[in-house]
Every structure is written in C-alpha cells, then in structure tokens.
Image 1 (cartoon, rainbow, N blue to C red):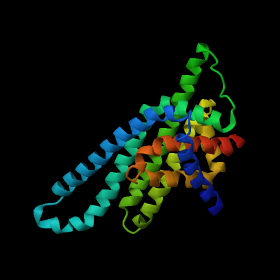
Image 2 (image 1 turned 60 degrees about the horizontal axis):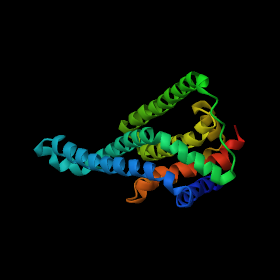
Image 3 (image 1 turned 30 degrees about the horizontal axis):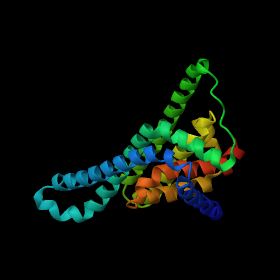
Length: 242
C-alpha cells in the first residue's frame, strides 16, 4: 500500500515534467488559462463568502463564538468551492484536456488512439458519454452527501477531515484518468474498475494533486499537471488492467 502511494505521488512529478516539454507546451496553454481564471475566482468567492457568513451568522452578543465556528466554516466553504470550481473548470476545459491527454500519450508510448469511426457512431457515443457522466455525478453526489452528514454528527465528525481528504484524492484520480481513457472509448464503469485495481497509486496521485491545488501558484498548474499525470498513470498502470 505504502509503495503504491509513493508511486502515485510520482505521477504528479511526471506530469510536471511532461507539460514543460517541447511539443506538449502549446496544448497546456488553454487548460492553464481556464484553471487560472476559475481558481482565482474561486479563491475570491471562498474568502468573501467566509467573511459574509461569519459577519451575519451570529448575533453580536455571540460574536465571541466566532473563533470556534471560523475553522468549521472555513473548511466547509473551501471544500464546496473547491469541488464546484474544479467541476466547472474540467467541464469547460474538457475538449482541450482530451487533446492534451492524446499528445502526452503519444509522447509516452507513440501508440495512436482509436480513429474516429464516422458520424454514424456519434449517437451511440454521445449516449454512452451521457450515461457515463450521469454515473460519475451520482457516484460523486452520494459520497458527498454521506460526508456532509458525517461532518455534522458530534463525535463521529472527528474522522471527517480524513474522510474528505480521501474523497478528494479519489475523485481527482477519477477526473483526470477520465481524459486518456475517454480517448480510448472507455467510460466511467471501466475507469472505476481499473482504478480500484490500482487503488494505492490512484489515491497517491489524487492526494498529491489535491495538495497542489491549495498551494499558491502551483494550484494554477494543477489541471494540466493532472491531465498529464493521469495520462501517465493510464499508460503505465491502468491500461494493463482493462
């Protein structure tokens, strides 16, 4: 397990190395721009919402409780903004991330992705993609709700920070493995099965990437690094288990 986690960490450094290489850099620009704009907006929104709620949540005679509530609301608002803005950023950048994943995979092993099968295949492909995305949203949503419940139960919520951290790492692994696997016409069901077979590597990759998203300046690079690192994870591990 520990060895797998460290191997997962390594895909982040691989991703950092890949996005700086000649021939890959031009395909990093659009995802980088989208991520920078949205993360800057997310940071501003999280800060303003935290200040607003702390100013209006308690009556003035209970203002002395702010020191107790501030960390709870800070964590809650951070996670809500983090997941929402990550989701929006990945939706907007999806076409560009798919191209970046294709170029990275070609650099890693030179194997072409399957050729376009023609416009007659589009209805079936769109249907599969839609079902896959719904399955992903349902999977994410049910765990999100369970973690919110866990967070507000006294005593039990002591494990909430660890649970949220694991959830964030796992969902980021799912999100960024999706691009190279989607290029091979593999969808959420296939992706989830492959990641479960390589759980330690996936969690290590997702955890270090989630840590990267909260480090100033590095967080702007998290999307292209995630795509490149997720593609490396696909080439070296996941592709061998599907």
